Every structure is written in C-alpha cells, then in structure tokens.
Amino acid sequence: MQTVEPMTGKDHSSADDQSLVKAAQRGDMGAFEELVVRHRDKIYARAFSMMRNEEEAVDLYQEAWVKAWQRLKQFHGESSFGTWLTRIVINLCLDALRKQKRQRAESIEAMDQESGGVERHMPVITTNPTAGLERGELRKRIDEALNKLSHEHRTALILHEFEEMEYKEIAKTMGCSIGTVMSRLFYARRKMAVLLGDLKQQDLI
Amino acid sequence: MDNEAQLKLQAYLDGELPEAEAREVANWLARDRDAAALHNELKNTRQALVGHETGIQLPESREFFWSKLEREIQRAEPREAVANAVPWAARIRRFLMPVAGLAVLVVASMLTFNNSSTHVSEMETSDSGAFTYHDDAAGATLVWLSHPLESDPADEDDLDIE
Amino acid sequence: MTSRPFAAAALVWLSVALALSEASVRAGGADFNLQAQLLWAGNGVNPPEGKNFKPVEPAVAKKLKDLPLKWTTYLEVSRTNFVVALSSARTVDVSAKCQLEVSAKSDSNLEVVLHSKSKEVFKRNQPLPEGEILVLGGNNASNDSAWLVILRRIPRAK
Image 1 (cartoon, one colour):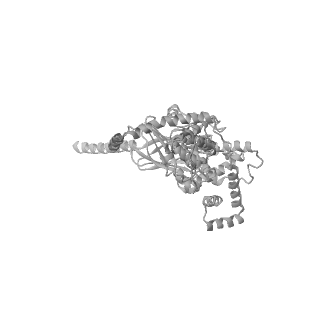
Image 2 (tube, helix red, strand yellow; image 1 turned 120 degrees about the vertical axis):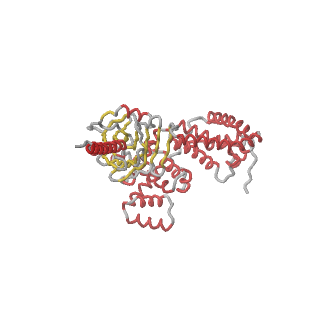
Image 3 (cartoon, one colour; image 1 turned 90 degrees about the vertical axis):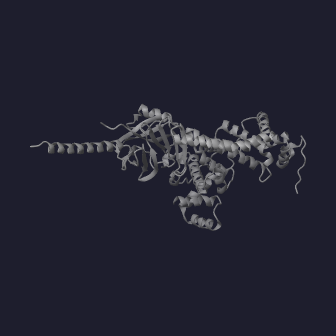
C-alpha cells in the first residue's frame, strides 16, 4: 500500500501529486502552490483552447483554481488531480460559453453550423493538408481554424482530441445526445481539414 | 455515402464501434475508395491536432499568478466561514428559502398572467435548433436558424423574382 | 298605388346591402396585410456585385439595431406585399429558391414556414401584432455575411 509521506515546507517540489493534495487538504498553501506550478500550463491551455480569448481564459483558469481549493476536501483521488482540475475548468468554460451564447452576437453567427449538412457534401481532402508544414505554421493554422469553429464544435473537438473523452462522456459534459456529439465532431473535423488545407468553404460548395 | 455511413466511419476511427460493426466497416473500407478517402481525411485531421496544446503557456509569471490566486482564495474564504459559522442563521435560512421560493413563484405567475411586462425574453428552441430572441420594447422577434439554407438567398441566381 | 310594398322592398335591400358591407368590412379587417423583405447583412465585407440592393428603410434598420446581431450593414434585396385571409394560407417567393408560407390561424397568430429548395427549414406559430417584425436569419456559406427575412404587417392599401 502506498503511504503518503507527511509534508514539510521544503518537500514540495519532489512530492507526488497525491502527497501534495493531502497536504493542501490540511491547509498547506505551499503544497497547493506546487500543484498550481505543476499543472498551470496544461490547465491554462485547455481554458484557452475552449475560450479562444486570453483574458477570458486567464479569468476562468483562476476561477478553476479557486474552486479547486474550495472543493479540495471533496477530492478523494477517483481520478488524477490534473484530470479533476481539468474537468472543473472545462465546466467553467462551458458555463461561460453558454452565457455568452445568450448574450453575444458572435454566437448567433455560428449557429448555422449546428446541424449543418454542409459538411456532408464537402469534397474529401485527399492530400494531407499538414504535410510539409513546419510546426509553427501548423500551430498557427490550427489556431486560426479553431477560432473559426462555433464553440459547440470546438468543444466537441477539444474534448475528444485533447481530453480523449469518449462520445458518451462528451455528451454528458456538453449536455447533449451522443448523436449530436458525433455530428459536431464530424463537422468540426471536416471544417478543420478544409481550413488547414487553406481552402475556402465557398469554393467547395 | 449518407450521413449515417459517414458518422459510422468516424466512430470506427474513434474506436467507438462494437467489434462486429468495426469489422464490417473495415471490410467496407477495403473495397470502397470514397470511404477510404474520407477515413484518411479524418485521420489526417486527427493527427494534425496531436500535441497542439503543448506550447500554450499561461501568459503570467508564476509569482504574479500565484499572488493573485492567493489573494482570491483568501478573499473567498471569510465569506464561506461566515456562511458556516452561525448554525441558527442556517436554520432560519432553510426555513425561509421555501417561503421565498413560493413568493417568487407567486410574483412570477402574476407577472406572466398580466403579460406584456416581460421586456426581453429569449428562448432556445432546441427541437428545431433555432435560437429565438424577443424584445418587447423593440417590437421584434429574431429567429436564427441553425439549418443553413441550401443556397444563399441573396445568391446571384436567386434574386430575380420580380 | 300604395308605397308600402316599395318601402318594404327598399328596407329589405338596404338591410341586405348593409349586411354584405358589414361582412366585407369584417373580412377585410381579419385579413393580414403583410410584407416580406429579404435582406443581405454584412460586416465590413462588400455585398455581391451587380445587384440592385437598396438601403434598408430606417424603421426596419432601427429595429434590427435593437436585436443582438453583429452585422453593421443591411441591404434590401427584395420585398413582397401580400394578403393572407383568416383561415387561409399564402406562399410567396422570397428568392428563386426560398419561399415563405404564411397561414392566418387566428386573428392574432400566424403560422410561418420557410422553405428552401422545396424543403421546410423552419416552422412556427408566431403572433405578429401591428408594429412588430419577425426576423428569420442565418449565416451565408461564407460566414462573413447573412441573410434575413423580415415579416411584418403593413397598412391596408387604399
């Protein structure tokens, strides 16, 4: 049985997550700070991928950490700490996106993608659109392409490709049916293929 | 290839199909060039995204972010402490909540019955995928369709209706 | 010769005439005099060239401004005036491939159906009081512009 070593103020950097969590649950802010340092970029990357806006991503990212601190006693190691925290930030981002959808005009313009039909008829991109692209250019193209997806499509793509969730889990997280998840994922992938290949949608329809 | 087949292909790529169905799709891919091409495209897109989030970094230094976070945690904590500190207050709150809830319902139903007091309301019609927004004061109802028209109504060919 | 039968006949004809005119007034009052406009909406992009687009009339522009739409430019592509009698339906062409079908279900409610390429893409029962507009919209394929169909009641033509 793995034992959790008691934490001292100096042990944080060499401690595993489990030990840090236990110490933080006892009120050790130093241990919590170490957790923040360890997971900061990965959790932020998730917030940014979903929100596509640095300021909003930072705010939600901070809110996720505050919530993690407040709920730490409820974390019993069912998953890794990183996974648990990622779920918190994903849910915060989804709430924010839903709120924005009710308030902002940008969401309306993206709604036509929702059930679409366009992606069913796009000609297949037969060449690998990313072949020959150097990493920086590919990253830039992917960022631009992700920006062009509606938040529903982008979220489905992110949860599947980056979070490696199954359809069922994505459906539960997004509050929709598995069929909707599949459609959104399909649309997102097809649109990404076109955008990464630097082709315009209207040229194909 | 119909949409159902396309989504099945995707599910096969994602390992979401039961074994028997996955074998069927594999056989289908072996004999259908169009299906194989689509499968390839989906696979390429997937591979392009691998590792994309690596390299995205928090745009604030560790110290700056931590000091902000620490302040926020400390600010949030006294509120929680007060909420939990006074059991009798909690009991009174528990008693009052349903009463308050009932009062809200009564007022809401009065407002609904009296109608026209809603200034702005919005509904999302999930069954048709349309988004509806209504503004009493503006005298306008907006319905944004999630089904794009097959053609752009303002397309050149479509304009001659006079 | 007595005038009594003549007066009675005149009275009867007058009553009939009054009844008929009242019925026609009632029927005319229950009719919906409607206008459907097709608009192009854009945001810093040029509208399709070579088309006779007109600026949107100020009353409509003002209502669109109050809606949560991001478009900064609206241009009128076409407009059609039509009448729908109570308990009847009317279909008008919004464009060559899109039709708007309106049924007057009651004296305050319309059933509005939008067809695109003979396929029904939207259907709803919608109250449309005088002075209000119904805006149906969606993005164009390019996502940098949109189409809008405005439906509103207009005064009866004299």
